Image (cartoon, rainbow, N blue to C red; front, side, top):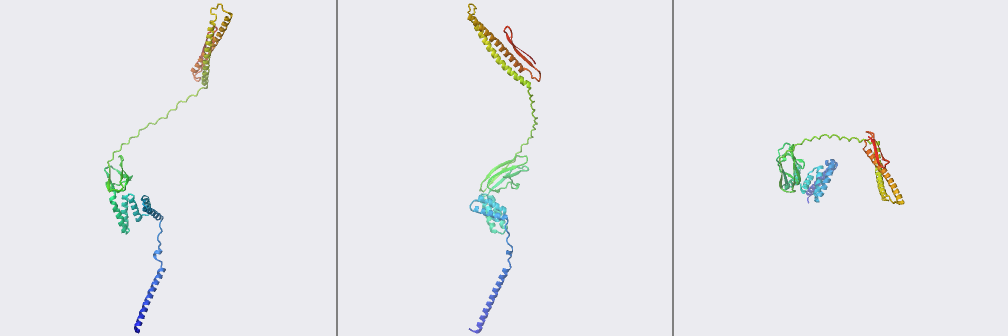
Length: 362
């Protein structure tokens, strides 16, 4: 090989080696500079999550697990709680999907449309397209409620499940979730009106409710004036019984009882007297040829008869006197109004007659 050719190749190789060394050195220097100067991202750490964001994330994860297991009734409330703490596009989309599965098609469609609008504003066209497609797919399944108001009363208020329906919504077929609803109408001076209806879960139809003209309310009757009742008069006090009157009443009972007993004894004596006297009259009635024993027996019977007669007189006399006295004590006026005295006693005359005498002062 010629010498000049060898010298040329050696020079080219030297240049290539030099350029390679320069490039390597520049790269090493740039790497060292990059390591020495801290990056801007490292200097600005990501902001820490708030307590609401952490709780919202936990609820969202729990709801996702329930939805994946098919338990949408338990998942929907957790999605709603998560959205109330941190309203993001993702939780809104999942909540709309959950509502669709439990039959709340009107709410789900409205939320899907809201997600589509939020995604377009955030520069996420793919998300917006998916959410809009889900909203359009629910359109044939929507149930709409039309409230046709015929009443023209001033101050008319229409409510749906106790929530006021704005006047601009009257007569418009508005999408509504399935379920039971109470439609009410009220106005000053009118009777309240209400009706109840149940909307199906999924059907493309319009359910119409007509609110009729309200009837006039009945006039309020004035309250009757009830006369004030006078307090009942207390009964007059019962006067206390005089101790003297009480004693007199006691004496009347005792004397009356004694009179009854005495009359009984006197009656018994009178019967015995009659018996002994009859028996004496039957002994030797002609009083001729009477034996000594008959005479003695007759004398004994006559003596017994007289004894019983005296006892009868005394018993009946005492009894009569006692009864008269007792009656007088009962009938006598009270000692407070007048003073009274009663005396009664039996008597027997020499010829055998008897009786009782009573005297009193009233």
